[in-house]
Structures are given as structure tokens and as C-alpha cells.
Image (tube, rainbow, N blue to C red; front, side, top):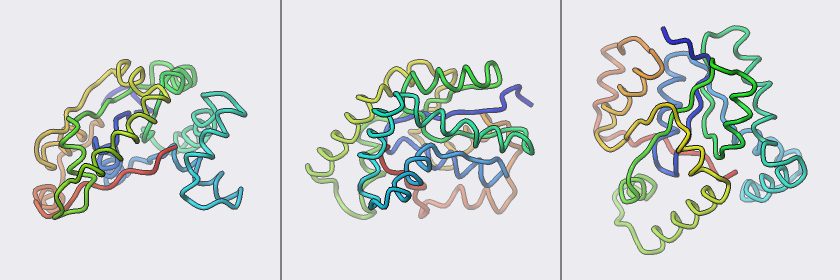
Length: 206
């Protein structure tokens, strides 16, 4: 059993953060998705989902670059009251890393999930459809927004790197190892090995 109680994940779009969150949830580990803070705020403002990015920027402009992380920390602490570990899905900047390190100290660790651009682009495209130049341009634009938030700094500060370039089952096994999850049941192993199941999609920008 590791000493980590809070495991944050960071990674560019299509890297596999959502799938890592699925592995945690299947093992009964609570997952706090930082984008949920933005989605809740967007709903409370009566705005449509496509305004998530705008709301995220507004929160940061009003309360500083750590605004979303600070709103997520109470959620993490509430889960820790009844759970040994919590996964925080989707840190996006060094400032957010600072917040979690300040709040949880050595009990926090950061995992960077990484894959080459073409691999990630293929995952984000519709199944069975060839990638277009428009798809690639859209992903590049989305990546630039993430990097503008400071994601490159966050990835550079990761304690652990998981390369998600092999099969889905191999990736899920690496995640289970990092999260110190016991060997999966036969049914879960069969699901992991299914070539027809796509990786879980990742949340919207925030």
C-alpha cells in the first residue's frame, strides 16, 4: 500500500486521463473531476455547456489561477473522511499542483499520462473515420489552450509518468499498479482485453 492519499492526473487531450479515472472508479476509489467545478458554475450561471471555457477563464480572472483547484480541495477532503485514496482527474497548471501540494503535502502525488499527438488524435476522432486536417487543427488549438494554462509545467513536475501507447489492457494495468489496485477479476480482465471498447472520453476544456 502506498502512502499517497491524493493522486492527481495531468495530460494533454486524448492521453487517457478519463480512462485512468474509470479504472479508479471501478476499484471503488472516488474521483474528483476538476472540470465538474466549472460545469456546476456554468449551470448556476444559466449558461450552456459550450461556455465551460469562458466560465473557467472568468473564475480564474476573478479568483486567481488557482481558483478551480481551491474549489476542488474541499471535495477531496470530504471523500478522504471515508476513503483511503482519492483521484483528482485533470490538473492543468503548476499553480494547481502547488495548491494540492500545500493542502496534502507528501500524501499527494502527480501522475502524467502521455502519448504522441497522432495517437491522441486518433482516439479523439469518431471511430471508423479517417482523421482530417480540421480534426488535427482542432486538437492543436485545444492543446494550445491547455498549454496556455500552464499544463507543460504541471507535466514536467509529475512524480510518475505513464506512457499510454500500447493496448488498452496494458494501460489499465499500469494505472492499477500506480493506484495500488489488486489484480482485476476475470470479468474485468476480459473487458480490458476487448479490442472493440474505446477509451473513455475526456471532459471539456476548463
